[in-house]
Amino acid sequence: MMPPEDSSQPRLAAGCRWGAESKPGTEERVVLFPEGAIKLQGTGRQVLERCDGQRTFGEIIKELQAQFRVADPAKIRSDISQFLEQLRHKRIVDY
Amino acid sequence: MIPNPLALIAELTHRCPLHCVYCSNPLELAAVTSELSTAEWIDIFQQAGKLGMLHAHFTGGEPLARPDLTELIAAARAAGLYTNLITSGIGLAEPRLKALVEAGLDHIQISFQDSREAAANWIAGAKAHAHKIELSRIIRRHKIAFTVNLVIHRQNIDHLEEMISFIEQLAPERMEIAHTQYYGWALRNRAALLPTRAQLEKAVETVAAAEKRLAGRIRIDSVVPDYYARFPKACMGGWGRRLMLINPSGKVLPCHAAEIIPGLNFENVREQTLESIWRDSSSFQRFRGEEWMPEPCRTCDRRAEDFGGCRCQALLLAGDATVTDPACSLAPAHHIIELALAEANSDAAVSQPVSASSFVQLQRAENLWDYRTNPE
Image 1: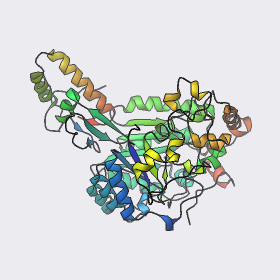
Image 2 (image 1 turned 120 degrees about the vertical axis):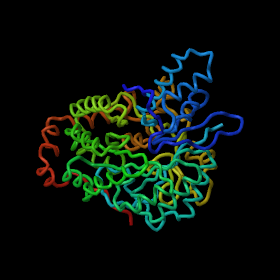
Image 3 (image 1 turned 180 degrees about the vertical axis):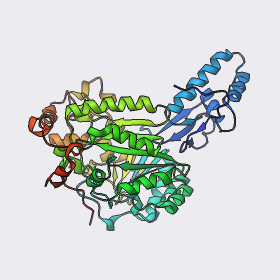
Image 4 (image 1 turned 90 degrees about the horizontal axis):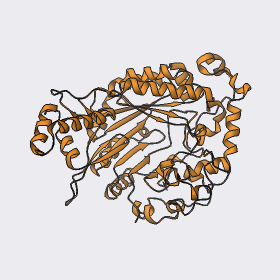
Protein backbone atom coordinates (compact mmCIF):
# COMPACT_ATOMS: atom_id res chain seq x y z
CA MET A 1 0.00 0.00 0.00
CA MET A 2 1.30 3.40 -0.93
CA PRO A 3 -0.84 6.47 -0.20
CA PRO A 4 -0.16 9.69 -2.16
CA GLU A 5 2.27 12.19 -0.65
CA ASP A 6 1.49 15.90 -0.40
CA SER A 7 3.79 16.61 -3.34
CA SER A 8 2.31 13.81 -5.54
CA GLN A 9 0.54 15.00 -8.67
CA PRO A 10 -2.30 12.55 -9.30
CA ARG A 11 -3.57 12.14 -12.85
CA LEU A 12 -5.67 9.69 -14.82
CA ALA A 13 -3.51 6.72 -15.92
CA ALA A 14 -2.71 6.12 -19.60
CA GLY A 15 -5.81 5.02 -21.47
CA CYS A 16 -8.23 6.28 -18.80
CA ARG A 17 -10.39 9.28 -19.63
CA TRP A 18 -13.63 11.06 -18.95
CA GLY A 19 -16.64 10.02 -20.99
CA ALA A 20 -19.18 12.37 -22.49
CA GLU A 21 -20.43 15.40 -20.55
CA SER A 22 -23.18 14.58 -18.08
CA LYS A 23 -26.74 14.98 -19.26
CA PRO A 24 -28.43 18.24 -18.27
CA GLY A 25 -30.02 17.95 -14.86
CA THR A 26 -27.69 15.19 -13.61
CA GLU A 27 -24.27 15.64 -12.11
CA GLU A 28 -23.07 12.16 -12.92
CA ARG A 29 -20.02 11.68 -15.10
CA VAL A 30 -18.26 8.54 -16.24
CA VAL A 31 -14.56 7.69 -16.28
CA LEU A 32 -13.75 5.10 -18.92
CA PHE A 33 -10.87 2.65 -18.61
CA PRO A 34 -9.89 -0.73 -20.07
CA GLU A 35 -12.72 -3.22 -19.56
CA GLY A 36 -14.80 -0.91 -17.41
CA ALA A 37 -16.22 2.42 -16.37
CA ILE A 38 -17.05 4.12 -13.08
CA LYS A 39 -19.85 6.58 -12.54
CA LEU A 40 -18.89 9.53 -10.41
CA GLN A 41 -20.85 12.26 -8.74
CA GLY A 42 -20.49 14.49 -5.72
CA THR A 43 -17.16 14.46 -3.91
CA GLY A 44 -15.71 11.59 -5.92
CA ARG A 45 -16.21 13.53 -9.11
CA GLN A 46 -14.79 16.70 -7.56
CA VAL A 47 -11.66 14.89 -6.43
CA LEU A 48 -11.02 13.13 -9.71
CA GLU A 49 -11.62 16.25 -11.78
CA ARG A 50 -8.79 17.86 -9.83
CA CYS A 51 -6.42 14.99 -10.64
CA ASP A 52 -5.05 16.81 -13.66
CA GLY A 53 -1.34 16.07 -13.21
CA GLN A 54 -0.82 19.74 -12.28
CA ARG A 55 -2.31 20.11 -8.82
CA THR A 56 -0.51 18.35 -5.97
CA PHE A 57 -2.28 16.04 -3.57
CA GLY A 58 -1.74 18.70 -0.89
CA GLU A 59 -3.47 21.33 -3.02
CA ILE A 60 -6.39 19.04 -3.82
CA ILE A 61 -6.90 18.37 -0.12
CA LYS A 62 -6.82 22.08 0.71
CA GLU A 63 -9.34 22.92 -1.99
CA LEU A 64 -11.78 20.30 -0.75
CA GLN A 65 -11.25 21.16 2.91
CA ALA A 66 -12.09 24.78 2.05
CA GLN A 67 -15.19 23.67 0.21
CA PHE A 68 -16.50 21.34 2.94
CA ARG A 69 -15.75 23.45 5.98
CA VAL A 70 -18.17 21.66 8.26
CA ALA A 71 -16.45 18.29 7.79
CA ASP A 72 -13.43 17.16 9.79
CA PRO A 73 -10.32 18.14 7.75
CA ALA A 74 -8.43 15.02 8.87
CA LYS A 75 -11.27 12.81 7.71
CA ILE A 76 -11.38 14.56 4.34
CA ARG A 77 -7.67 13.91 3.94
CA SER A 78 -7.87 10.22 4.85
CA ASP A 79 -10.98 9.62 2.71
CA ILE A 80 -9.41 11.17 -0.37
CA SER A 81 -6.13 9.39 0.23
CA GLN A 82 -7.92 6.03 0.39
CA PHE A 83 -10.03 6.82 -2.65
CA LEU A 84 -6.97 7.62 -4.76
CA GLU A 85 -5.09 4.61 -3.49
CA GLN A 86 -7.94 2.34 -4.54
CA LEU A 87 -8.02 3.90 -7.99
CA ARG A 88 -4.27 3.48 -8.28
CA HIS A 89 -4.62 -0.24 -7.58
CA LYS A 90 -7.14 -0.45 -10.39
CA ARG A 91 -4.64 1.42 -12.59
CA ILE A 92 -7.09 4.27 -13.16
CA VAL A 93 -4.99 6.88 -11.36
CA ASP A 94 -1.22 7.38 -11.27
CA TYR A 95 0.70 9.52 -8.79
CA MET B 1 -37.81 -1.57 -19.68
CA ILE B 2 -34.60 -3.25 -20.87
CA PRO B 3 -31.42 -1.36 -19.90
CA ASN B 4 -29.11 -0.29 -22.72
CA PRO B 5 -26.22 -2.52 -23.72
CA LEU B 6 -22.84 -1.41 -22.37
CA ALA B 7 -20.36 -2.66 -24.93
CA LEU B 8 -20.05 -3.65 -28.54
CA ILE B 9 -17.76 -6.47 -29.60
CA ALA B 10 -16.77 -5.86 -33.20
CA GLU B 11 -15.45 -9.04 -34.79
CA LEU B 12 -14.05 -7.34 -37.86
CA THR B 13 -12.81 -10.44 -39.66
CA HIS B 14 -12.17 -14.11 -39.01
CA ARG B 15 -8.88 -13.97 -40.92
CA CYS B 16 -5.88 -14.41 -38.61
CA PRO B 17 -2.12 -14.90 -39.07
CA LEU B 18 -2.04 -17.04 -35.93
CA HIS B 19 -3.56 -20.50 -35.58
CA CYS B 20 -3.83 -20.79 -31.80
CA VAL B 21 -4.98 -24.18 -30.64
CA TYR B 22 -7.22 -22.61 -27.97
CA CYS B 23 -9.01 -20.14 -30.25
CA SER B 24 -12.65 -19.59 -29.25
CA ASN B 25 -13.73 -18.61 -32.77
CA PRO B 26 -16.33 -20.92 -34.29
CA LEU B 27 -15.10 -23.91 -36.29
CA GLU B 28 -17.11 -22.51 -39.18
CA LEU B 29 -15.53 -19.15 -39.85
CA ALA B 30 -17.23 -16.29 -41.70
CA ALA B 31 -16.08 -16.00 -45.32
CA VAL B 32 -13.98 -13.03 -46.39
CA THR B 33 -16.43 -12.13 -49.17
CA SER B 34 -19.27 -11.60 -46.68
CA GLU B 35 -17.39 -9.09 -44.46
CA LEU B 36 -19.09 -5.78 -43.65
CA SER B 37 -17.87 -2.68 -45.50
CA THR B 38 -16.23 0.35 -43.89
CA ALA B 39 -19.44 2.38 -44.24
CA GLU B 40 -21.50 -0.38 -42.62
CA TRP B 41 -19.17 -0.54 -39.62
CA ILE B 42 -19.17 3.25 -39.23
CA ASP B 43 -22.96 3.23 -39.14
CA ILE B 44 -22.85 0.51 -36.45
CA PHE B 45 -20.57 2.59 -34.21
CA GLN B 46 -22.85 5.61 -34.58
CA GLN B 47 -25.83 3.50 -33.60
CA ALA B 48 -23.90 2.08 -30.64
CA GLY B 49 -23.02 5.56 -29.38
CA LYS B 50 -26.66 6.66 -29.61
CA LEU B 51 -27.74 3.55 -27.73
CA GLY B 52 -25.54 4.64 -24.82
CA MET B 53 -22.86 1.98 -25.21
CA LEU B 54 -19.51 2.87 -23.61
CA HIS B 55 -16.94 0.49 -25.06
CA ALA B 56 -16.08 -0.86 -28.50
CA HIS B 57 -13.83 -3.93 -28.51
CA PHE B 58 -12.15 -4.53 -31.86
CA THR B 59 -11.38 -8.17 -32.29
CA GLY B 60 -11.47 -11.01 -34.81
CA GLY B 61 -9.65 -13.02 -36.10
CA GLU B 62 -7.03 -10.37 -36.40
CA PRO B 63 -8.55 -6.87 -36.69
CA LEU B 64 -5.31 -5.55 -38.24
CA ALA B 65 -6.15 -7.63 -41.31
CA ARG B 66 -8.67 -4.87 -42.11
CA PRO B 67 -6.85 -2.05 -43.96
CA ASP B 68 -9.58 0.39 -42.83
CA LEU B 69 -8.96 -0.20 -39.11
CA THR B 70 -7.71 3.36 -38.45
CA GLU B 71 -10.84 4.79 -40.00
CA LEU B 72 -13.03 2.46 -37.94
CA ILE B 73 -11.28 3.40 -34.67
CA ALA B 74 -11.75 7.09 -35.49
CA ALA B 75 -15.45 6.51 -36.20
CA ALA B 76 -16.00 4.62 -32.94
CA ARG B 77 -14.20 7.31 -30.98
CA ALA B 78 -16.20 10.05 -32.70
CA ALA B 79 -19.37 8.20 -31.67
CA GLY B 80 -18.26 8.54 -28.03
CA LEU B 81 -17.01 4.98 -27.52
CA TYR B 82 -13.91 3.87 -25.63
CA THR B 83 -11.83 1.94 -28.13
CA ASN B 84 -10.00 -1.29 -27.34
CA LEU B 85 -7.93 -3.21 -29.89
CA ILE B 86 -7.50 -6.91 -29.14
CA THR B 87 -4.70 -8.09 -31.37
CA SER B 88 -1.85 -10.49 -32.02
CA GLY B 89 0.16 -7.47 -33.14
CA ILE B 90 1.12 -9.16 -36.41
CA GLY B 91 1.05 -6.52 -39.13
CA LEU B 92 1.55 -3.64 -36.71
CA ALA B 93 4.68 -1.52 -37.06
CA GLU B 94 5.17 1.86 -35.42
CA PRO B 95 3.72 4.11 -38.18
CA ARG B 96 0.42 2.26 -38.15
CA LEU B 97 0.29 2.20 -34.35
CA LYS B 98 0.91 5.95 -34.33
CA ALA B 99 -1.95 6.44 -36.79
CA LEU B 100 -4.25 4.32 -34.63
CA VAL B 101 -3.38 6.29 -31.49
CA GLU B 102 -3.91 9.56 -33.33
CA ALA B 103 -7.28 8.26 -34.54
CA GLY B 104 -8.25 7.83 -30.89
CA LEU B 105 -7.28 4.30 -29.86
CA ASP B 106 -7.52 4.16 -26.06
CA HIS B 107 -6.29 0.68 -25.22
CA ILE B 108 -4.34 -2.09 -26.89
CA GLN B 109 -4.34 -5.68 -25.75
CA ILE B 110 -1.69 -8.09 -27.02
CA SER B 111 -1.91 -11.80 -26.47
CA PHE B 112 1.18 -13.83 -25.60
CA GLN B 113 1.19 -17.61 -25.85
CA ASP B 114 4.19 -18.28 -23.58
CA SER B 115 7.34 -16.68 -22.22
CA ARG B 116 9.54 -19.10 -24.17
CA GLU B 117 9.81 -18.36 -27.85
CA ALA B 118 9.75 -21.90 -29.24
CA ALA B 119 6.78 -22.90 -27.10
CA ALA B 120 4.88 -19.68 -27.88
CA ASN B 121 5.29 -20.14 -31.63
CA TRP B 122 4.31 -23.78 -31.32
CA ILE B 123 1.03 -22.95 -29.56
CA ALA B 124 0.26 -20.11 -32.00
CA GLY B 125 1.20 -22.17 -35.04
CA ALA B 126 3.15 -19.16 -36.28
CA LYS B 127 6.40 -17.28 -35.65
CA ALA B 128 5.00 -14.34 -33.75
CA HIS B 129 6.67 -14.16 -30.34
CA ALA B 130 9.72 -12.02 -31.12
CA HIS B 131 7.63 -9.48 -33.01
CA LYS B 132 5.23 -9.16 -30.07
CA ILE B 133 8.09 -8.34 -27.71
CA GLU B 134 9.36 -5.68 -30.09
CA LEU B 135 5.86 -4.27 -30.47
CA SER B 136 5.39 -4.09 -26.69
CA ARG B 137 8.43 -1.80 -26.49
CA ILE B 138 6.98 0.42 -29.21
CA ILE B 139 3.59 0.57 -27.47
CA ARG B 140 5.19 1.97 -24.31
CA ARG B 141 6.38 4.98 -26.31
CA HIS B 142 2.75 6.00 -26.87
CA LYS B 143 0.16 7.35 -24.47
CA ILE B 144 -2.22 4.45 -24.49
CA ALA B 145 -3.34 1.77 -22.03
CA PHE B 146 -1.59 -1.57 -22.53
CA THR B 147 -2.81 -4.99 -21.47
CA VAL B 148 -0.96 -8.25 -21.96
CA ASN B 149 -3.19 -11.26 -22.20
CA LEU B 150 -1.88 -14.72 -21.47
CA VAL B 151 -3.98 -17.81 -22.05
CA ILE B 152 -2.92 -20.64 -19.79
CA HIS B 153 -3.48 -24.38 -20.12
CA ARG B 154 -1.92 -27.74 -19.44
CA GLN B 155 1.09 -27.11 -21.71
CA ASN B 156 2.32 -23.84 -20.20
CA ILE B 157 0.78 -23.56 -16.73
CA ASP B 158 3.73 -25.24 -15.01
CA HIS B 159 5.94 -22.21 -15.61
CA LEU B 160 3.32 -19.56 -14.88
CA GLU B 161 5.64 -17.74 -12.49
CA GLU B 162 8.23 -17.37 -15.23
CA MET B 163 5.54 -16.13 -17.63
CA ILE B 164 4.33 -13.50 -15.14
CA SER B 165 7.91 -12.22 -14.70
CA PHE B 166 8.23 -12.09 -18.47
CA ILE B 167 5.07 -9.99 -18.77
CA GLU B 168 6.19 -7.74 -15.93
CA GLN B 169 9.20 -6.74 -18.05
CA LEU B 170 6.87 -5.65 -20.86
CA ALA B 171 5.47 -3.09 -18.35
CA PRO B 172 1.74 -3.15 -19.14
CA GLU B 173 -0.81 -1.47 -16.83
CA ARG B 174 -2.80 -4.62 -16.84
CA MET B 175 -2.23 -8.36 -17.20
CA GLU B 176 -4.97 -10.82 -18.00
CA ILE B 177 -4.31 -14.40 -17.00
CA ALA B 178 -7.03 -16.38 -18.64
CA HIS B 179 -7.59 -20.07 -18.26
CA THR B 180 -8.61 -21.56 -21.58
CA GLN B 181 -12.36 -21.67 -22.11
CA TYR B 182 -13.54 -24.67 -24.01
CA TYR B 183 -15.38 -23.49 -27.10
CA GLY B 184 -14.59 -23.75 -30.79
CA TRP B 185 -11.04 -24.92 -31.39
CA ALA B 186 -10.26 -25.15 -27.68
CA LEU B 187 -13.01 -27.69 -27.11
CA ARG B 188 -11.75 -29.77 -29.99
CA ASN B 189 -8.26 -29.71 -28.37
CA ARG B 190 -9.46 -30.02 -24.79
CA ALA B 191 -7.59 -33.19 -23.89
CA ALA B 192 -4.26 -31.47 -24.59
CA LEU B 193 -5.27 -28.23 -22.81
CA LEU B 194 -7.24 -29.00 -19.66
CA PRO B 195 -4.87 -28.73 -16.66
CA THR B 196 -4.70 -31.18 -13.79
CA ARG B 197 -6.09 -30.21 -10.40
CA ALA B 198 -2.57 -30.01 -8.97
CA GLN B 199 -1.50 -27.68 -11.80
CA LEU B 200 -4.54 -25.50 -11.19
CA GLU B 201 -4.04 -25.22 -7.44
CA LYS B 202 -0.43 -24.18 -7.89
CA ALA B 203 -1.46 -21.60 -10.49
CA VAL B 204 -4.04 -20.06 -8.16
CA GLU B 205 -1.33 -19.56 -5.52
CA THR B 206 1.08 -18.13 -8.07
CA VAL B 207 -1.47 -15.58 -9.28
CA ALA B 208 -2.38 -14.54 -5.73
CA ALA B 209 1.29 -13.96 -4.87
CA ALA B 210 1.84 -11.95 -8.07
CA GLU B 211 -1.23 -9.80 -7.40
CA LYS B 212 0.20 -8.87 -4.04
CA ARG B 213 3.70 -8.23 -5.35
CA LEU B 214 2.56 -6.10 -8.32
CA ALA B 215 -0.21 -4.14 -6.56
CA GLY B 216 -0.27 -0.51 -7.69
CA ARG B 217 2.00 -1.28 -10.66
CA ILE B 218 0.26 -3.92 -12.74
CA ARG B 219 -3.34 -4.87 -12.27
CA ILE B 220 -3.97 -8.58 -12.69
CA ASP B 221 -7.35 -9.81 -13.87
CA SER B 222 -7.60 -13.57 -13.87
CA VAL B 223 -10.29 -15.65 -15.49
CA VAL B 224 -11.10 -18.72 -13.43
CA PRO B 225 -11.44 -22.11 -15.10
CA ASP B 226 -15.08 -23.01 -14.79
CA TYR B 227 -14.43 -26.74 -15.09
CA TYR B 228 -12.86 -26.65 -11.63
CA ALA B 229 -15.31 -24.16 -10.09
CA ARG B 230 -18.35 -24.97 -7.96
CA PHE B 231 -20.57 -22.55 -9.80
CA PRO B 232 -20.65 -21.52 -13.46
CA LYS B 233 -19.40 -18.23 -14.84
CA ALA B 234 -21.86 -15.40 -15.48
CA CYS B 235 -21.29 -15.77 -19.20
CA MET B 236 -21.22 -12.34 -20.92
CA GLY B 237 -22.70 -10.89 -17.71
CA GLY B 238 -25.98 -12.55 -18.68
CA TRP B 239 -27.54 -13.21 -22.07
CA GLY B 240 -28.70 -9.98 -23.72
CA ARG B 241 -27.89 -7.99 -20.61
CA ARG B 242 -24.73 -6.07 -21.39
CA LEU B 243 -23.10 -6.96 -24.67
CA MET B 244 -23.77 -7.14 -28.37
CA LEU B 245 -21.38 -8.91 -30.71
CA ILE B 246 -21.32 -8.20 -34.43
CA ASN B 247 -19.66 -10.94 -36.43
CA PRO B 248 -17.66 -10.23 -39.62
CA SER B 249 -20.71 -10.66 -41.84
CA GLY B 250 -23.00 -8.47 -39.73
CA LYS B 251 -24.87 -11.05 -37.68
CA VAL B 252 -25.69 -9.73 -34.22
CA LEU B 253 -25.06 -12.22 -31.43
CA PRO B 254 -25.40 -12.18 -27.65
CA CYS B 255 -22.01 -13.96 -27.36
CA HIS B 256 -19.11 -15.33 -29.39
CA ALA B 257 -20.43 -18.84 -29.82
CA ALA B 258 -24.21 -18.28 -29.95
CA GLU B 259 -24.48 -19.26 -33.61
CA ILE B 260 -24.02 -22.92 -32.70
CA ILE B 261 -27.36 -22.97 -30.86
CA PRO B 262 -29.95 -24.58 -33.13
CA GLY B 263 -33.33 -22.95 -33.56
CA LEU B 264 -32.12 -19.41 -32.98
CA ASN B 265 -32.34 -16.95 -35.84
CA PHE B 266 -29.83 -14.11 -35.64
CA GLU B 267 -30.66 -10.77 -37.20
CA ASN B 268 -28.21 -8.89 -39.40
CA VAL B 269 -27.24 -5.22 -39.06
CA ARG B 270 -27.67 -4.99 -42.81
CA GLU B 271 -31.41 -5.40 -42.28
CA GLN B 272 -32.22 -4.06 -38.81
CA THR B 273 -31.01 -1.46 -36.33
CA LEU B 274 -29.01 -2.40 -33.25
CA GLU B 275 -31.74 -0.93 -31.07
CA SER B 276 -34.52 -3.05 -32.52
CA ILE B 277 -32.34 -6.17 -32.36
CA TRP B 278 -31.43 -5.45 -28.73
CA ARG B 279 -35.03 -4.82 -27.67
CA ASP B 280 -37.16 -7.01 -29.87
CA SER B 281 -35.23 -9.83 -31.56
CA SER B 282 -36.27 -13.29 -30.50
CA SER B 283 -32.60 -14.34 -30.21
CA PHE B 284 -31.74 -11.68 -27.61
CA GLN B 285 -34.93 -12.39 -25.69
CA ARG B 286 -34.56 -16.15 -25.74
CA PHE B 287 -32.40 -16.48 -22.59
CA ARG B 288 -32.79 -12.99 -21.16
CA GLY B 289 -34.04 -12.73 -17.58
CA GLU B 290 -35.28 -15.77 -15.66
CA GLU B 291 -38.37 -16.97 -17.53
CA TRP B 292 -36.46 -19.55 -19.56
CA MET B 293 -34.67 -21.08 -16.59
CA PRO B 294 -34.98 -24.77 -15.76
CA GLU B 295 -34.46 -26.24 -12.31
CA PRO B 296 -32.25 -26.03 -10.32
CA CYS B 297 -31.58 -22.47 -11.62
CA ARG B 298 -35.17 -21.26 -11.38
CA THR B 299 -35.23 -21.45 -7.59
CA CYS B 300 -31.50 -21.01 -6.98
CA ASP B 301 -30.22 -18.13 -4.84
CA ARG B 302 -27.45 -17.52 -7.35
CA ARG B 303 -29.65 -17.13 -10.42
CA ALA B 304 -29.17 -13.33 -10.53
CA GLU B 305 -25.40 -13.75 -10.16
CA ASP B 306 -24.53 -16.37 -12.75
CA PHE B 307 -27.73 -16.46 -14.86
CA GLY B 308 -27.53 -20.24 -15.17
CA GLY B 309 -24.04 -20.08 -16.69
CA CYS B 310 -23.28 -20.40 -20.36
CA ARG B 311 -25.92 -21.45 -22.91
CA CYS B 312 -23.34 -22.49 -25.47
CA GLN B 313 -21.51 -24.68 -22.99
CA ALA B 314 -24.81 -26.32 -22.05
CA LEU B 315 -25.35 -27.13 -25.72
CA LEU B 316 -21.79 -28.25 -26.41
CA LEU B 317 -21.56 -30.54 -23.41
CA ALA B 318 -25.12 -31.58 -22.56
CA GLY B 319 -26.56 -31.27 -26.07
CA ASP B 320 -29.27 -28.84 -24.90
CA ALA B 321 -28.86 -25.05 -24.65
CA THR B 322 -31.80 -24.74 -22.25
CA VAL B 323 -30.34 -26.73 -19.34
CA THR B 324 -28.16 -25.56 -16.45
CA ASP B 325 -24.51 -25.12 -17.47
CA PRO B 326 -22.84 -28.49 -16.71
CA ALA B 327 -19.97 -26.54 -15.08
CA CYS B 328 -22.33 -25.93 -12.13
CA SER B 329 -21.90 -28.50 -9.38
CA LEU B 330 -25.70 -28.49 -8.97
CA ALA B 331 -26.40 -29.19 -12.66
CA PRO B 332 -28.06 -32.47 -13.60
CA ALA B 333 -25.42 -32.84 -16.34
CA HIS B 334 -22.44 -32.07 -14.09
CA HIS B 335 -21.17 -35.64 -14.51
CA ILE B 336 -19.97 -34.61 -18.00
CA ILE B 337 -17.52 -32.15 -16.44
CA GLU B 338 -16.52 -34.68 -13.80
CA LEU B 339 -15.73 -37.18 -16.54
CA ALA B 340 -13.51 -34.66 -18.38
CA LEU B 341 -11.72 -33.87 -15.12
CA ALA B 342 -11.26 -37.56 -14.33
CA GLU B 343 -9.63 -38.04 -17.73
CA ALA B 344 -7.40 -34.98 -17.27
CA ASN B 345 -6.31 -36.24 -13.85
CA SER B 346 -5.96 -39.93 -14.69
CA ASP B 347 -2.59 -41.59 -14.13
CA ALA B 348 -2.14 -42.06 -17.86
CA ALA B 349 -2.83 -38.39 -18.62
CA VAL B 350 -0.72 -37.06 -15.75
CA SER B 351 2.28 -39.11 -16.89
CA GLN B 352 2.19 -37.46 -20.35
CA PRO B 353 4.91 -34.83 -20.72
CA VAL B 354 3.98 -31.18 -20.87
CA SER B 355 6.02 -28.56 -22.66
CA ALA B 356 7.94 -27.38 -19.63
CA SER B 357 9.46 -30.80 -19.10
CA SER B 358 9.69 -32.21 -22.57
CA PHE B 359 9.01 -29.71 -25.28
CA VAL B 360 10.88 -31.57 -28.03
CA GLN B 361 9.02 -34.78 -27.32
CA LEU B 362 5.69 -33.00 -27.50
CA GLN B 363 6.48 -31.26 -30.75
CA ARG B 364 7.04 -34.63 -32.32
CA ALA B 365 3.80 -36.04 -30.98
CA GLU B 366 1.36 -36.28 -33.80
CA ASN B 367 -2.31 -35.44 -33.42
CA LEU B 368 -1.79 -33.65 -30.12
CA TRP B 369 -4.07 -30.90 -31.36
CA ASP B 370 -5.57 -29.20 -34.41
CA TYR B 371 -4.47 -25.72 -35.36
CA ARG B 372 -7.13 -23.12 -36.11
CA THR B 373 -7.55 -22.71 -39.88
CA ASN B 374 -8.58 -19.65 -41.88
CA PRO B 375 -11.88 -18.80 -43.57
CA GLU B 376 -12.37 -19.25 -47.33
